[in-house]
Length: 157
Image 1 (tube, rainbow, N blue to C red):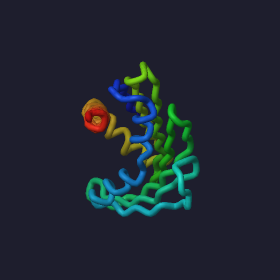
Image 2 (cartoon, rainbow, N blue to C red; image 1 turned 90 degrees about the vertical axis):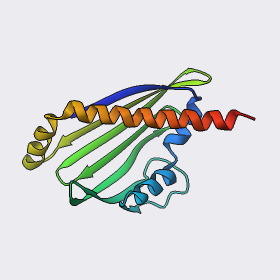
Image 3 (spheres, rainbow, N blue to C red; image 1 turned 120 degrees about the vertical axis):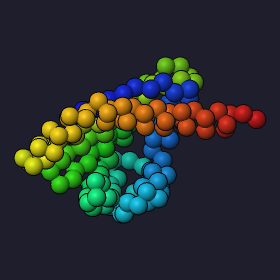
Image 4 (cartoon, rainbow, N blue to C red; image 1 turned 180 degrees about the vertical axis):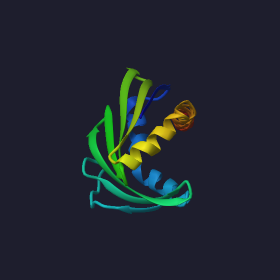
């Protein structure tokens, strides 16, 4: 099942890329939401090879997700691969500079089953795909709006 959306952001591509790769910020947000997170690499700078072992509660059960940063092309593309029991997931984020102060963010999330039970779970999720797609788009829009606001505040004297 694939979800995708595009958002135009009033900020330069390097600013958007920096926000997308502020991994300590995302780690703290996950911890605040009750996830258990362990970094699996020793890299000082963001880059290919970063990984996380995440344990989170989803639909009343604890789930483990292993995330791996597979592509890091500054300032245009980031790809994160994740696997959980029965599922492979890929998150791709592409940036296109529309002008010096405007960037288009394209986000795609693809989830694929590896087992028969995962395939059954995904089939039931397809029944509410429109609702899930709306939530996905809304979260990307919220991220874009917050980033624009932060960028605007930093630019103001």
